[in-house]
Length: 372
Image (cartoon, rainbow, N blue to C red; front, side):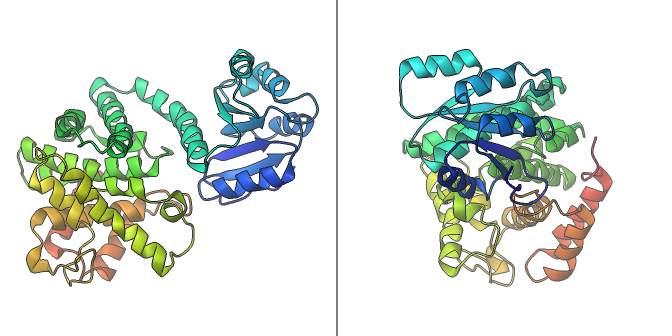
């Protein structure tokens, strides 16, 4: 069995294929997202499954010693492996092979050759399905907040690809239960519900949406304004959907060219949101200015503090806090108190001090970092 690659805390994906070069290629393609383990044949895969259960298996139909279809059937007979997501990789797009894959118990099929983005999207969907299934046990408002926002967020990439405007009414409808949960001080299960979600961009955006709504509630804004804040938080990073996976999830420091690509998400977000004239100016301001800094060193326009309104200042604080405390493929989550310490001490010239003090008090009062 090959050594597991990557850092602890990431989902473990097992690749079963007799071609060592193919296994290496897939492992490298997924290394920024998952821990990887490789097996050259079905016997070694089955033996290892008794010791370490992965989060998902990627099995080729021509796997040595019995083939991929037979391996999937054996796995489905094991009670201890019940519910294990399996993607069967077929060498040809043949209807009979697709039917056999379904009959033997595969959850999804990929046809060689496939795009890296298709592989990542399929794995993420299967891994997240288990997390999203757990939302069914939540109270109605919290369940609706999670299911509604993930549905609208997942649909946005298709809308953008078609060049259509984002439906703002659908966004506010999805965010309304979130605002309701904030106003009844029963929102922590929403944050906990996405803590381990595999779609980082969605998890981060929902966290920003929740904390922006809470921030608005704390300073006494009406629920209509809290809904604008929540909607702005959910949409603030939509431009990242155009950023290549290898840049968005790169474990190491970005190169100068990669920084240019990453920073382009702000202008892309504004362009996408501006397609719909119904989207409020405040929502676009949150997207446009959440990376600006009071001392004028932020991006994309290096705006000084005199040019930043309270929406931009609040969004900058929440976005930085989210980035520091989010769990990423290349780092664990930072404790809230440590993140706030960095923000208060090292970012005094970047963030609004008065709003930051209110934000810190809000988090401590609400015990946001404590699990429910």
